[in-house]
Image 1 (tube, protein in one colour):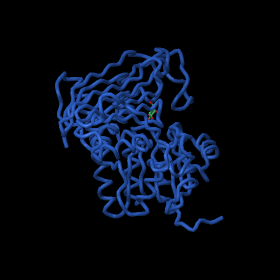
Image 2: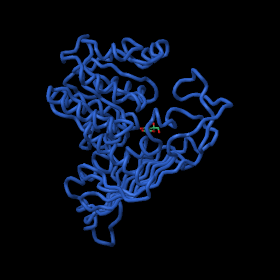
Image 3: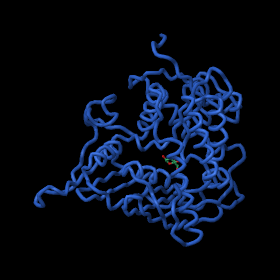
Image 4: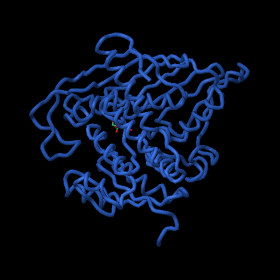
Length: 391
Ligand code: SOE
C-alpha cells in the first residue's frame, strides 16, 4: 500500500542499544500518530557489514551499509539519525547537515564544547536552508515530564526556588564489570556526568525554562582499572584477563545556581547499588512543588501551596488521560506507557517540525548549552572552584 503522505527516508548510523530504541520509534510513530510525512526506514549503518546486515534485518531497515560517508551522500536519504558513541557525532552530523540531510543526534551532543560549537554553527547554517536538527534528550517526551513543563509554564508552582535532580544507575558497581566504550574518554567524552548527568541538566533546564548559570562540582572514579573487552565482542563486550585504565568519571555531584535565582542540587552516578535507572526530579516553587520519579513514570506529583493545611499534600496525577501530552494516541486511561514511548514521541515531534518547516527542540544550540554545563562541572572539579557557564 502506498502512503498519501510525502516520504521521509531515514538512514540510521549505529545499531546498538540506542539504535534499537530509535528503530522501534521509527516503526511505531507512523502507526500510532497521524504524521504529515511518512518515515521510510531505508538503511541502517554499522562498521561491520555482517553485523549491520543482521541488525537491519532484526530492527526493520530495508538495507544495511558499512560506510556512513557513502550513505550520507545518497540522494535517496532525507534524514540521518546518529546513534553512535560520542566521538563520531560531530563528524557525522556536520557532514549530514552539509549534504542537506535533517539530523537527529543522540545525547550528549558531542564529546567536547569545541565540537558542540561546530555542530551548533553547522545546524544554524543548515536551518537557514530549511534543514532541521535535533538532539535526542528523549526523557523530555515522557508525558509526565511534558505535563510538568506545561504546569510550570502556566505558573502553577510559582517562582522556582529549588531544583533537585538525580540520575542513578549501578551497572558498573562491580569492579569486574568490563571496560566498555562508555568508560573510555576518547569514545564517550565523559562518564556518568555526560551520559546520564546530561539528561538531568537538560530536563531541569527544560522544566524550569531557565538555564544553569554557575556550578560547583566533584567527579570521582571509584574503580580505576577494569578487565579489557574481548576483541570482536562489539561495543558492550565480555571481559578478558587483561586490565586497562578507566578514563572517565564513575560519579558526578554538583550544586548550581540558575540564571533566574533557583538553587540546584544534582547527582549522577553508576555506583548507586540497587538503582538501575532512577531519575528523580523535584521542583519547589513559591506556589507549590512538582516531583517526578522515572521508576513510576506515568505519575506526576503536585503539591499546591494554596490548599488548606488540613487537606494539603502531594497528590499523584496519573498521566494517562487523553488530554495529557502524547497520551491520546495510545491506550485508554490508566494503561500506562514505558521507556520506549519517549523515543516514539521524539520522532513524532521531529517529523512534525520538519513538515511544518520549524526548528524542533532541543536544538543543537540547546545541546551545546548542556555541553558547557558539563565542561564547567569538570573544570570545577579539577580546580575546586565555582565555574560560570558561558552563554
Ligand atoms: C546508559 O548509561 C544509558 O543507556 C544512557 O546512555 C541513556 O541515555 C539512558 O537513557 C539510559 O542509560
